[in-house]
Every structure is written in C-alpha cells, then in structure tokens.
Image 1 (cartoon, rainbow, N blue to C red):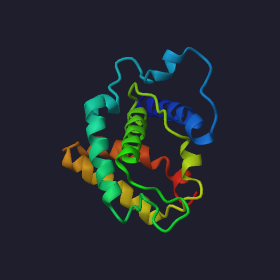
Image 2: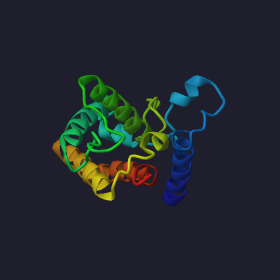
Image 3: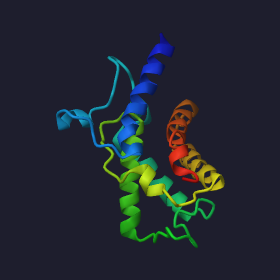
Image 4: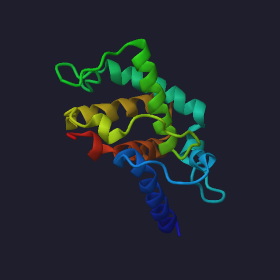
Length: 169
C-alpha cells in the first residue's frame, strides 16, 4: 500500500512541476484549487512535519544567506554572462521564491510564483560542484534547525529532483 501511495505522490509531484519546468501555463480550473496542497485523507505532509510555513521561511532565510555567501555555490555567477548582484532587494526576492518553491515541494499551500526554473537557469553553466555545494548548504541549514534526518532526506531529495533543469542546462 505504501508503495502505491508513494508512486501516486511521485506522479502528482511530476505533474505539479510540469508548468514550472516546461514553461506550460497552469491547469484550467478555479484559482483557489491551485493553492491547495495535494494530500491523501489523513496524510501528514512534509510541510506539516517541518513545522509549516513559518519553519520553511526560517529555513529559507538562513539557507539563502549561507548559499549566497558560499563561494563554492557562486550564486552571483561571478565571471559569467549571467552575473547576479546580491543587493538586499535581489536577495529578498530570491528568498521569497525559494520559500514558495520549498513550500510547494513540501506539499504546503503556497503557490510558487517565481520565474520558470528551466528558463531561469538556462545558460548559467551551473556545475555539478556548485550544485553539490548548494545541497550541502541546505543540509547544514537543516542541521542548524535540528530537522530530523528522515525529513532532511525527504526535502533534499525533492530539491535534488530539479537537478537536470538546473545543472549544466
């Protein structure tokens, strides 16, 4: 039964990411349905297990500060045509989009309103090493917040699912 539920979740997850990764528009239907998490009756989501929106926003705030400061991640794309300046405004926007993204990945109610992930990272030449450093910074942040290992693995695996549209894209 658990494998069936997990398989259903993966299919739902993939379908939810299609608009983000493929540039498609949202599915037709009432707008309020697009902001509702996909849950089986009685299911406790990763969003719930992490502590909800306030916990995800706190994790995001610390994580982005750590990653932007980490030269291994090279968030600012120094020496690259896609250079990014880490101003207070640009960091705030990045934090907002990451919080929405993590909330969505964790089956929370927040809709992701950021730019298309594939289009945004196209041509950035993000290396495997930069990707691993980003995930390492996420792990360090989750450790800092004493997030249990199973929840850490769940979240990191969900973020890692975007690897192919981010790395060397």
